[in-house]
Amino acid sequence: MTVGTVAAIGARTSVSGLALAGVDVLVAEDPDAVRRAWQDLPGTVALVILTASAAESLGATVTEPDPSRPLTVVMPR
Image (cartoon, rainbow, N blue to C red; front, top):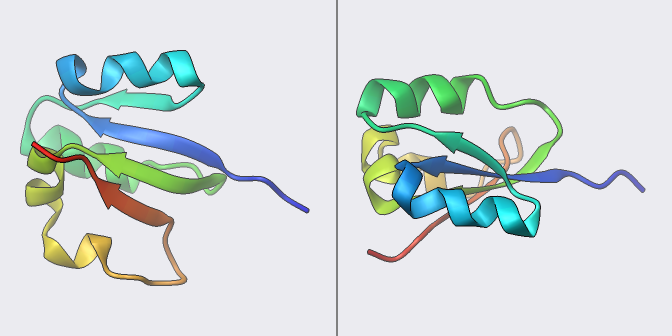
């Protein structure tokens, strides 16, 4: 069985602590950086945790189930 990794995208102050739990933290402070981080996700990522601001930058459809991308959840504000 292949196990995927977990990544978090968002502002440093919101996601940096997740690194302590083994999450791959991708700091993205503005919408362009969020979109770049999303596009550059490795194929091994199975779960993406987004800050609310990062999710807004990517649009509503990113959290809809789609077998072509990782499961995606949004942190509450």
